[in-house]
Length: 240
Image (cartoon, rainbow, N blue to C red; front, side, top):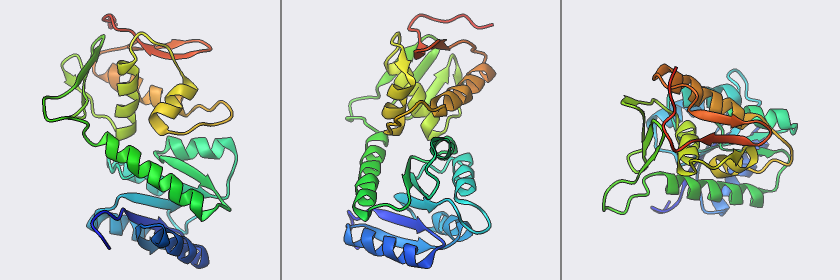
């Protein structure tokens, strides 16, 4: 392994598939560890730094979706790509809603898997501190202040406890204050994913943000524009 090789954990219970994916990713320049259960994956993530996870949904015992949900509940922000034979839009939405960063349907081409993991790695690297050493970038809109480089968000004087995906969604809304952003635009901005049909994953995460903002004493910060999308207004918004 070289210092610049991304470390990938492959979690797949089908041994032939697991070995084939591990071999293909190794050939693609990744440092690969492969395990067959969610429990083994969780143990590995607890003891070794990992850059990316390839996670099968249909695992014995704890499912891939449940493992993903547990990791995000613990604020583990490793990029996760889900593998699944389920190709319905609702299945992809569920995968993204529990915290996955991408979703690839089986059967798949190894070249596409390598390309998607490389893209996830680039997006993850860009999101970890974009400062230039000359001070932190602070975005504001209404009661919201976001310190981009320190990855800190405040509603008034209250520090918001946000997951990585919630922080990125709120940042894009604040960065584009006064602009109504469609669901598809936000899906592309935050998840880097373009569905061919409408999904509700953005609505799910807007709901998470609204609950946390309300708990901080700020309601109606994120405004829904019916039939279009969402917007945060630059002017202060009165709280109820």
